[in-house]
Length: 260
Image (cartoon, rainbow, N blue to C red):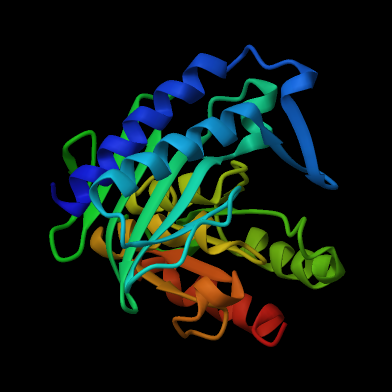
């Protein structure tokens, strides 16, 4: 099977597991990994089925996964987030997803994000465009001052909260609106779809953003870290935006957070 087909199969199987648990979790099925960072029985089972599916077709590939850590393999790397938006999931908010991004060497080549409670599946393959439910998507063309942008609060980098809030205030005053969905993967998917015009967040993990990066790029958008470079998978600091909104968002974020 093709890489993208296996990723899609894994996301669909994991999504079924998440929906079996959605709205039915008990406190016995929720653990706190660190303060305000949770894992559920659904996360674990979702990740298990994803890894089993991938290894059934590509046993030599590298897997980088949120809960298990994954395994070392060859130059093909699968970034797996079995449940992005866990807090939303726990509280019954339907903005959560399964996210799988595949990298070969230093290039993202395939991505699938499935949001089962919303009935949405986002797919991208290098050089072939980005799609939502088999319909091609593209980034918006709105100017920065009319933009609706998304962000996420730095709960893993609270020592940078003051700098972030200064940055947030300036972005908030320059654009038409700011949203916080609680899932970086969904924020990037919505940016690719043209719902959001841009997104920025800091201190993320690579599995949070790997798939979304390719979606935005294949939808015609721009992705960088806070220094305008491609180090987002290592730093966890990311800006993803349409070409019309990127410059304005980057200028503010870089000035306040570029050296953090």
